[in-house]
Amino acid sequence: KLLMIYLLVLVLVAILTYVLRYIWRLSIFGTSQKLGQILRTYLYKKYTVMSAIFYQNRRTGDLMAHATNDIRAVQNAAGAGILMIADSLITGGTVVITMAVTVS
Image (cartoon, rainbow, N blue to C red):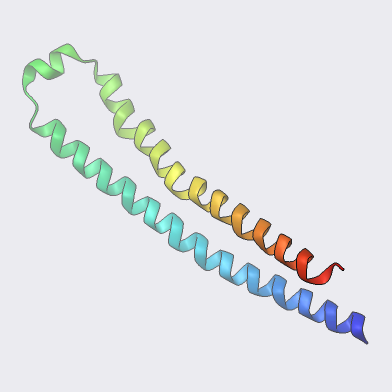
């Protein structure tokens, strides 16, 4: 009977974890998408006020790389990187606390 209670608690915790992670991921990745949009808008505004000499001294490919690859890297770090760090800390902390409480 005690084993069934532990099994039920384990299943409920797994379902709760799944639901919370889903909501959390939507929130974090949504925020990182907004960050990417803000950075692209800022970069576009900056590019539109630069002089012609600026564009003569720099290659178009380098400027496009900043607008695509670099902003995407920041966006990935803000989304997946933060999610991975927080997920590891929360999961690790939960495991340590559970072990401290249940193991005699």
